[in-house]
Image (cartoon, rainbow, N blue to C red; front, side):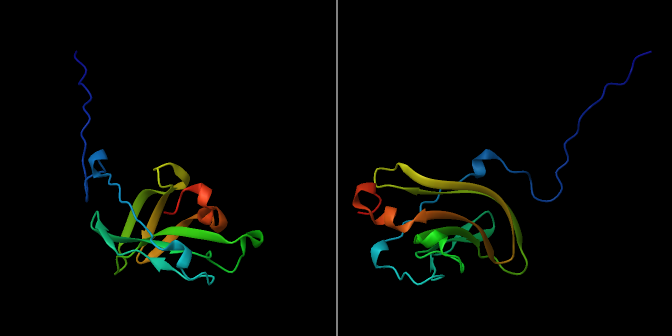
Amino acid sequence: MNQPRERAIDVDVGKPPFVSSDWQCINFHFHAFPSLITRPNHEVTSPEIPFGGHRWALVMYPSGFGAYRHDGVQKVDITLKHCSENGTTARVEYTVRAKDLNGNVKAGMSQKQSFLGTMSSGFLTLVRSEILDPTSNILS
């Protein structure tokens, strides 16, 4: 007697699964960095970018985020912000990198995160004096 063959059936419920063609690289350029306000928790926010049915922005804190002071060293914190409202949830995997003028990565972080409504999470932390150092080749 022949055994029935097992067959696999894929069923997508809701939004189709992620495909690699959905990846997009967005370059943010923060200009006039040395003149930015260096008060703790002061944020500089990029314009919102629509992608994947959501709105996003990159937020930089030129003098760090939060009450902590990073062991007395002035830091710069950068984070991704989910700007969509009405309790919209987004699950993303993203990478934030700081590059020098030649395109070499000086620092970076990758993270998988769920965003609920308008929020941000995860920080790439850089040392402010290293960014301002002319030998770092980060600023023009």
